[in-house]
Image (cartoon, rainbow, N blue to C red):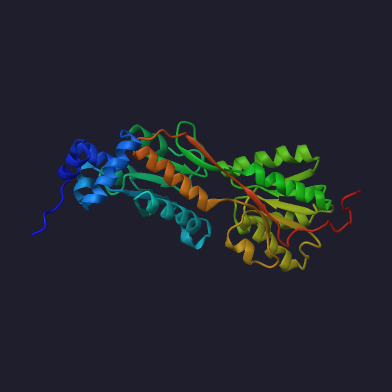
Length: 342
C-alpha cells in the first residue's frame, strides 16, 4: 500500500513547520518568496496534494466572490452589453487567482438584499458592486461590519474603487472633432447621480474650454430613449451642433435611431461620438465612433483588488484604468464645409 503524503512530510523535508506549509501553499504574504518556493518544490517532489476542503475550513474561507448586479424592473441586466463584459473580466481573473464567482442580484422584489449576510454566512468572501449611485447607505453599513467590497465605476470617499479615467479617450475625441472642423458640439450627459455620469460631464466641460468649442449640454440618463429625446431637441434647433457627443453608447444609438427616423444622414448631417465601445457600437450602421471604456479590464482589476484585500496585501483605495478612442463611420466633416484650415 502506498503511503499518503501528508503536510507533516512536506514540513519535515522542507525544514519548516506545518503551519508554514499551509501558508506557503496558500500564497500568504507573511511567508517569504524563498520559503514559498522551497515548500512548493518539496510538495511537488513528494506528490503532496492538500485537502482543499480542509484548507477552506481551516482558513474560514469559501474562495468565492460575489458580483453584485443591479436589478432592473423592465429588463434583465445581462441583455445589456456592459454586464457580460464586466463578468468576463471578473471570471477570468478570479479563476487565475483561485476563486469562483457567484452572481448576486442586489434586490429581492423591491427590497435590497442583506448582502452582509452573504459574507457572514460564508456564501462568499467579499463583494464586487457592478453599478451603484454615488450615495448608497449600504456602503457605510458594510464597512461598519468589516465586509470586504469593491465598487466598479464609482468613487466614494473611504472605500475601495475601480474606475476608468475618461479624460484620455475624451481628449482624443475632441482632437478628432476639431481636426475634422467641428466648432459647435452638443453633449448628452449621463445620469449625474452616478460617478461616471458626473465625471464625464466634468471632463467634457474642461475639454470644451481647452479646445475652444461652443457647446450645448442636454441632461440624459445613459439610455437610448434619452438619446432620441436629446437628438430631437438639438437637431431641431435653428443652428444645431454639427457633432453630438454622448456619455454612453446607448444614448448615441438613440440619436442614430432618431436620425434614421427623420432621414438625417450620419455623418453628413451630424456626426456622433459615443462612450463605451461595447458590441452594439461596432455592429450598428454606420459604425459608431466612440470612447473605449475598458470594462473587462476593470472587472479584472476589481477582482485583483478584492482578492488582495481578502489575502491581507496592501491595496490602494482608488484604482484607475485608461480609456481609448475608436474611430468608425459616424464622424466626418461638418456639412457647412468648415473643415480644417491650413
